[in-house]
Amino acid sequence: MKFGSLVGLVSLFSKGAYGWGSSGHHAVGYVAMEFLAPKALSFVKESLGVNYSYSLGPAASFLGDIGQPLHVENRGVGGNAIPVTCSGNTTNLHALWDASLIEKLIASEYDNSVTGWAHSLAESIKYGKYQRFAADWVSCSSTTAKLHPVKATAEGIIPLKCPIVWAKDSNAYDCSYVFNYINGTDLCDTSYYDNAVPIIESQIAKQGYRLAAWLNVLFDGSVKGQSRDTVDTTESQVIIMTERDIIR
Image (cartoon, rainbow, N blue to C red):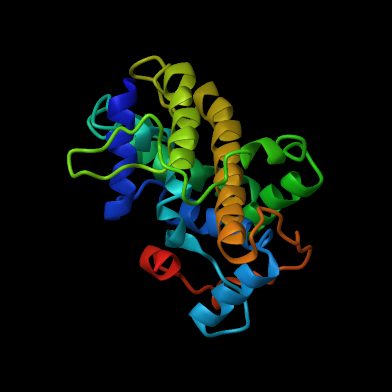
């Protein structure tokens, strides 16, 4: 994909475009909650007006959705114009990555619990397979650095540097895996699903961790959070925070 096109696609996030489906949004938010520093956590609590659990959910529509490979891809209108089959049902490639693959994963491995899935990802960042990669995920963490050299969009918007870095990382999966399948096969009942899951999980974990890092930089002056081991994420206590609430 050409870099100029990538810049244009990333700029869509500021207009409220969405990538991951509901479960993906919530998972990014839940992961982020486990790494917020004190002032960032205080901001979230005060903004939501409660002292229970939170999902930053659609607050991740700017940062979290950059992790969805097809949200930073032009081919087939980001996969929306490419029909595919999942578990016998017709859908499109974008929707498959938005939700279908995730919903199958959560149902088969986490008893339909988004919070259980997100907590598992957070644990992998703290102690498991993602621990050695976490620092690199937030090596670009500035909330103000502009893209250089400057490449303004048609509307005159100059994108921030770090979201572009993260988008290029995500877009690489489009070339290496997302579009590599045999037409006519069921993508949820073949090895395509098995190999897609590690990509989806790492992308959700990355963007949750990056969302926390950005909030920590904004409110605490450092990417480092407090890595809480006990975050109550009871389904009935979820409160969704909108993007404008978090960037106002």
